[in-house]
Length: 383
Ligand code: CAA
Image (tube, rainbow, N blue to C red; front, side, top):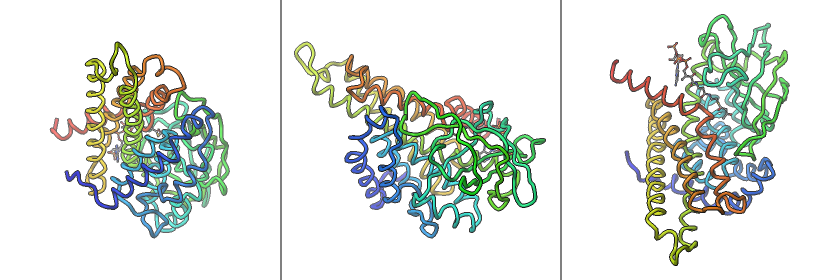
């Protein structure tokens, strides 16, 4: 794998880094404390083209590759993890499936608004009674002439409160398990649905996580993505891509924690020397540095494979599994290096640890990533 970034990729990295340092880092503490959606930052990122990064230019996107997207996600999440997930959902869970499975009319209609960030998107798969077992969902969409009538409740929906457009996974044939599942694009302005409970979370507090309530919600049949029965594959392949974004989010959070711990170890003195001069601290810093680079290499490999049109389910599961668990280790150590100061809100260490935790859960828990990796590996070995 060529590790040399192109001029465009370097430019994206520099733009995202500078935006994170100037705009996101100074506000991240308050975004978390107040649990406030970072509306003005999101608007500025949309103007930079960061909300439809891989969408072709003809549909209003930036027309970039997935490696650029992963690089940007790392930088933005280093600045603010909440802003990172808001951006990742719009890019990989909403624009991506519409780009991949939508027809030209759907792309024009939905991507035309989503990619430049005129409206925000969300992705609704999980339900109160089904998370890891995605095919166990209950929400139905029953055809009535030229509309589907949708009934059910979706849970854990990032951007649920702010989104106008929802990629919704439903049963169009409840008799079948995954083969009866379909994907719809629901425009809340023409097919109104309810916003349920807004969750009070441990971390990523600036992003909204809600339930969505569908009660006889009428969605045009023209909004079906692909064919009836394609929905499970749409969802699974969307999550393959989404996992690269979440892995990059985990990496960005970890890098922020690492850099702050590194600086602190060069400022704080104990027993007459800087704590960074003690072997105990250096061991932690060395492990953190290795974890960061290993995570980045896995993420870039998955993104490059996606860009090359290769199969990348296992690669993105490996990237997400490793990066999210590395992020938990790194943020834990960063807090430890800060000692008592790490445990209080004056420093960022505790926020990074809280923000990192969700990356081991959403878009597939670590247990699901291991299942995907194991299944694919067994298949490769023909056993
Ligand atoms: N791409 C395309 N198709 C796929 C696929 C993939 N990556 N993975 C599986 N499929 C296909 C299979 O080929 C199979 O098709 P056929 O019947 O035609 O052969 C079909 O899907 C069913 O596959 P499985 O038998 O493997 O299905 P399963 O029920 O055993 O489930 C699973 C597999 C991997 C466990 C899956 O359910 C899964 O990924 N669960 C986790 C769900 C998840 O990540 N949820 C996160 C929600 S999003 C979120 O977090 C919200 C947010 O806002 C951030």
